Length: 201
Image (cartoon, rainbow, N blue to C red; front, side, top):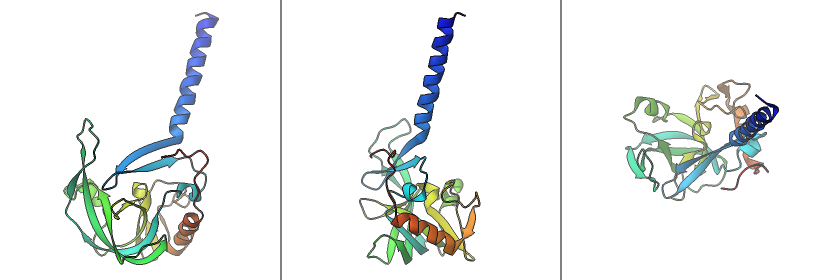
């Protein structure tokens, strides 16, 4: 193999690595919000304030009831069809930690069906004490902020979640002290800002 071919291979490899790095920085996921799509963005935010730039509401509440699963047209044709399953839950708002709300109850939308044991296992259940980090929809209902990142179960003065966020989890621990966690997330929400490398959506 001559020097020219080696040079082309090295340049191609460098380009592939660069493109891969750019793609890894930001991943967008379209989520249906009842009338349109909300976009969950996973980025290389360096602070929780940057991570929370699109959070609308943080509450502590009690799960009142779980509604019937229904199918919602997403408006986008895909190979898997153009509908998604949503299971609503009614949440009694016990305390607003961030944001504004004039209701004592909200509708919290969950992806998936109660008939699927894996999906159902991740859903909030009646009487559970929860702390929810939320995005508001155009209909007034709420999605969990960035899927598992927004769902925290409260028990014995601690919170626990399936979140994979290094910024939300404390030293990789899935369980954290409730009051310390509340201070951390409310401070981040009150100081939220869009990172300079965050895309416009």
